[in-house]
Length: 150
Image (cartoon, rainbow, N blue to C red):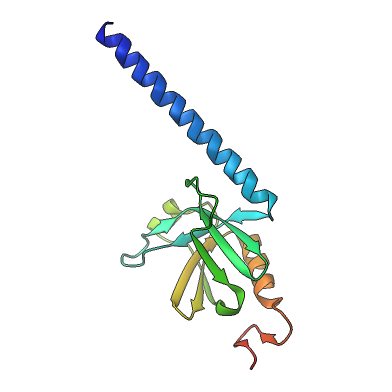
C-alpha cells in the first residue's frame, strides 16, 4: 500500500476519534444535567500568577454540596466538591485582563472562604444569584455569615 494511503487511514482514524470524543462530551453533559441542573462554572485551580490558572467547567448542586466538573473531561465524577456549610461568600469582581480571554463571556469572579483557604470561581450573574440563594438557604440552625450555629 502506498504511503499516502497510510496517511489517509491515519487521518481518518484521528478524525473518527475526535468525533467520538465530541459525542462522549455531549452524552456526559446530558447525563450530568439529568441529575440536577448544571450551570457554567469556572474554577481557578492555580493562583500563583495573576489572571492565570482558570479551568472551564460545569457546576451542579447536589443537596448540601456544590460539585464542579471539568468541561473537557469524560469523567462522570466531580473534580471538586464544596460543602455548603464550609463555603462563605466574601467578594465579587469583574474579570479583567487575561481572565476575560480565559473565562466564559460576561462571567463575574466570585471569592469564597473555606476552611482550606480561598476559592475563586467564575459564573454568570444569574448563576451568582442562584449560588447566593443556595448558600442562604442552608438547613435550620445555620447562619449564612458565620457557618453552623453551635
